[in-house]
Image 1 (tube, rainbow, N blue to C red):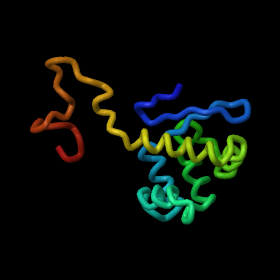
Image 2 (cartoon, rainbow, N blue to C red):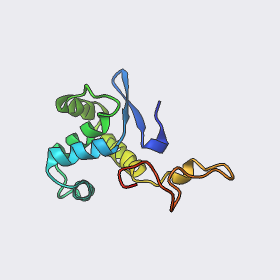
Image 3 (cartoon, rainbow, N blue to C red):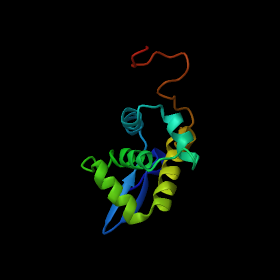
Length: 128
């Protein structure tokens, strides 16, 4: 089931339902595959003159990897063909927007509950 607070976008292609998400790992896959930063990729995808179908396919593929790690780049291209390039771009756009949305207010804290990383408190992370 798609979780919009995590950037999930579900869609049907053929007789299967797929879920797209642009997690940190997916964004790294994009950067590795295309040799450019994710902001440069987003800028090029938004510009029809600089957009390349190869880029669309890589981004689409990377977005599927969290929920469908078995999908190959070639299979991602087939899914794009099944749902249409226009709808594929809309799915990528929707999932990208959700990935970069601040969802901290989507899970409000109960009164008196401290956040796990309240300012000034020691945490358990690498920088603590």
